[in-house]
Amino acid sequence: MPIYHPPRREPRVLALAIAGDEIAWAVADPYMIRGAGRAAGQLRSRPAMVQRLVRREKPTLLVVGSEALAGVVARVARRTGVPVAAGRPPRLSRSIACDLYPELRALAPGRLESLAVRAVAAVLYADTPSRRYAPRRNRPLPRRS
Image (cartoon, rainbow, N blue to C red; front, side):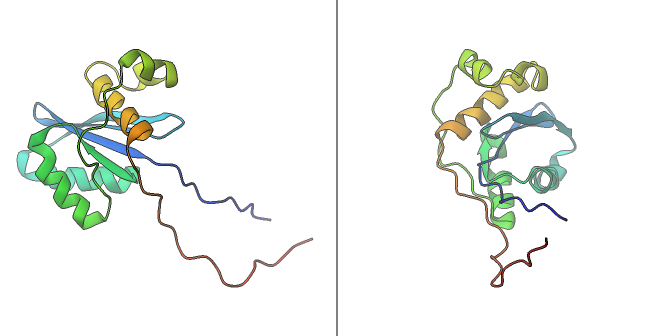
């Protein structure tokens, strides 16, 4: 018998920034840092890289960490329907972020740590819309005994 779970409604934030020739990214939700890393590619492939990250991580909100990437993220956000955070989230200290998310330094080492802290700040303070799901069924599920 399948077990039916309610849909997850918590926000998931994808923070993006340019780090040299790469795109640095970090994903956070209210419970944990989902991941962080770098996506390497050429300048002309940045929209495809950002769209691939959005499809893979399924965020409810995008946060831009560098102004050079803002135009690309805005185009991808329009195409995918994921909103971009208006403005910057309030500043959050690294010590508070590490207290709330102990796995932060292990999953986002070095320069990725500041991007992950920005994603955590957006999870805590940004106004994130709830996720959209398929419409509810009109008929009840059959009961099995």
